[in-house]
Length: 212
Image (cartoon, rainbow, N blue to C red; front, side, top):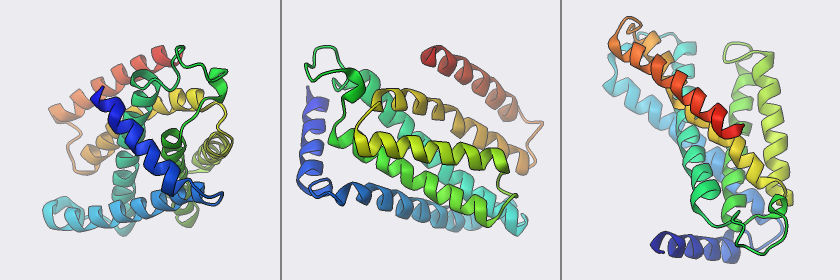
């Protein structure tokens, strides 16, 4: 009941301010881009002062280090919101008599998708700028498809449930990024590296089961 109350208040604020005008749905996209910039700069500052291995990395490795932190924060955010909207909120519940589930959306679900679009735009811009060091053609195709599908769901309000079900797979991203950090820090033979690999394996199994 308390969680539902907070959700109602958040959606009311989004209706009155963030999504009140036709151009306003683009605000979360801009917010997502600025959030990525903030995380990138904060990671650079914290890493340079608290991680000794950071200063010994090449310029490109430091860029990827910061980029993966940005990726991790987005993955945590979108995974938490996807799980909440799909499994805990009543947005896609059968009890809601608001038409087919494929057309169900809310100001909150639309806002979250906009933030995610902002992240993918930022990330693909970095991929193009440093191409192919941050990712090859497969990354470009993946991000373009993600941007198109997320933007479509955000702007039309259609198929948001299925979009969020796919986005739950982002739960594997923090583990994959952590594996890269452990490798670059020279901890490939550590216990943490082994535990991380096992965690990634089981998270993929869980995600595959949920999607199917």
